[in-house]
Structures are given as structure tokens and as C-alpha cells.
Amino acid sequence: MFKHPVPERAHSVSLAPDAKQVVFYARRPGRLAWQIDLREKRLVRTLHAERGRHFYGHGCFSPDGEYLYTSENDFENARGVIVERELKSGKIVREFSSGGISPHDLRLSSDGNTLVVANGGLQTHPDRGRDPLNLDTMQPSLAYVDRHSGELLEQIAPPHHQLSMRHLWVTPNEAGAQDEVAVVMQHQGPVTDQVPLVGFHRRGQALRTAMAPLSTQRQMQAYTASVCVHPQSGVAMVTCPHGGLVTLWDARQARFLKALPLADAGGANLSADGEAFLVSTGLGQINRISPQGIRKVLANTQNSHWDNHLVSARG
Image 1 (cartoon, helix red, strand yellow):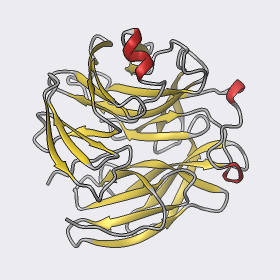
Image 2 (tube, helix red, strand yellow; image 1 turned 90 degrees about the vertical axis):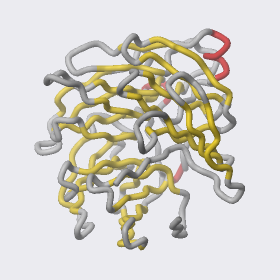
Image 3 (tube, helix red, strand yellow; image 1 turned 180 degrees about the horizontal axis):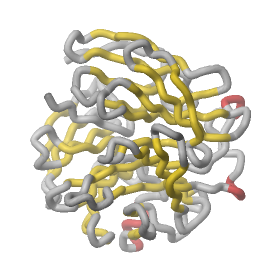
């Protein structure tokens, strides 16, 4: 086990393609990220957001691992930007528009060229902390952006303008078909509104959304944290920490399957063997959950409180 203290609460983590390095990002509106060498178990460098920018807690690597892309807030101009950094030096190469404001999660398509961006649509400013400033005029979107040119290739809006798109999972498809993107949302309107919090999308098609039965939908409390899709079964895992649930969905049919109680469930990823889900909690548990819903507690660490995201390091 390797631990390294950091001055701010971390949110998510990106694993390099060679699994030798990771980057942790401060929780918004944090301005720091930490590049760590997993083999040597050391901090390589601390990355800093430029003046007038802050991180949104997420990023991804180029296929060769030479470049890091981070979602950031240009808060003085109320626009979302994707910032490209050279990993070897940590220097910023350039930035381009995210296609919206408050870009949150950021993933790379299997083509190696297209960034998938969850634009939350919420205008914020560090002077106001995490307070949303534009609830009535939100414009969240799922955006596809060319990482080479910065061109916005496609953009999809959710069915309600207050459905803030937050977290993603990209499942590659065979035979040249478009990747399947799972997107989970947080509703910024009344918690009693009956709106979908889970959606699935392929380029060139409409967004397919799904809702749970009313009792489960209410228990989710309009809030989701992480999403992960098991590629063989097509089952999607969505964590709902405010509701004390993990929910399972049929990603191919865009429909609800079941819910399991799990207090403060946050991070979700595939296990290293690819056969199950790993789910972390804010109470220090690491759980193994099968696509059928069978749960096993792998760890219960009283001194660790995990945030909303989890990466399984292979290799």
C-alpha cells in the first residue's frame, strides 16, 4: 500500500495507459492535481491550474500516455475548457472549448481521437464556492470533441435542462460500431421531479434514458456518483450515495434491473479480472458485486474514507 498526503480533498483519478502512473485531481473548485509514479511509489509533481481556472476533478490520457486532458472551469468567462498537458514535463500545451460550461467527467473514445465530455451546465465561481449561479438557464450536454483540432463533433442535450450531466463510462463496440457511452446525471431541480438519471448514447443516435420504479427513483434522491458497465453482460452499475444504494441497469435495453442497499456507495469500476464490479464507500469499504447483484465485502478500513470514484489498476 502507498499513501501520500495532499493539501486538498481529491475527487477522481486517471490511470495512464501503461498503468505506471496516475493523476489525482482536487475536488472542484480545487486548483491542484498530483502526478504519482506507481512503480516507484512517489509523487512526480503537483500540477497547477492556470490563473482564472480550476479543475473539475476529472481527466484522461492520450492513447500513448504522453498527454493529459483535464476538464477545467474558465470561471471569469463562464466557459468550460479542456486543457492539454505534456505528461513528461507537466507543461500546458493548449486548451480548447468543452462545448459547454462546467465540464465534469472526461473520457477518450476507442478511436483514440474523440474526447467524450459530460458538460454539467452549471455556472460556478470560486468566490461562491460550489453554489450554482444559473439554475434557470442551465444548458447541460454530452459533447464529443476532436482532441487534435478541438472541434465539437456532436452534442446531445438531456430531456430536462436541469439534469446536470456528470459521469461517464465508454464501452468500445466491435466491427467498427460507435462506442456505447453511459452517462449519469444529477437533477438540480426539486428532488420530487420525476426525471431520468441514467442514459445511454451512441454517436449519431438519440439519447436513451431509463428510470427506476418510483420508490427506488425517490430513494436515489436525484443524485448519482459513478457509473461502470460490465462489457460481457451489458449490465451497468450506478452508485447513489445520497440514497444508500447501488443500482443495476441493462445498458443494451436502457432499463432498470435492481437496487442493492449499500451505505454511501461512491466509486465504481471493473475488478482487475474483469468479472465483477468494485464499489468503494465513504465509510471505508471496498465491495465486490457481480452483474447478478451478489455482493462480497473485500475490505473494511475504518481509517479510510473513499471519495466518489475508483480506478482498478491492471498490470
